[in-house]
Length: 122
Image (tube, rainbow, N blue to C red; front, side, top):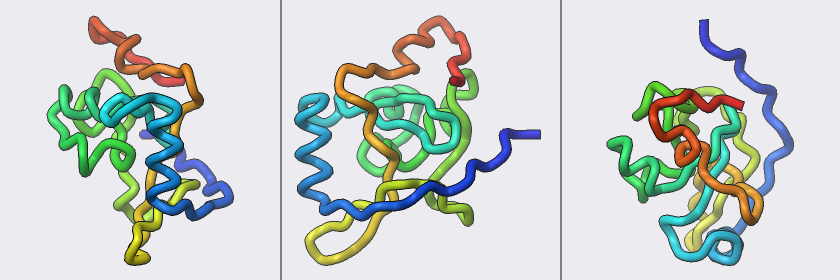
């Protein structure tokens, strides 16, 4: 059996411009941003997602790297029935998108640390 589903935490809405400014301030330009999967806690970048076969602009921060690589992370996505994310990004027209939390400044991808195929699941 897989991991039990985490209990949803309190959710907050963040304007897209603010989220992007925060991400850029912490990590520099996209695709250096580091996202944290709300289910397994694996830290990953858009570059990681792309290298694993996913789309960095539509799946990074939305689907865990484990959907594309079986040796790290889990297969969680924010497009499913269970909504455990804590961040909802709101764009200028009011459309809302669930997103992974950003890692803290200075944190790096667990996928980078898993080179050689070692599983990294906190």
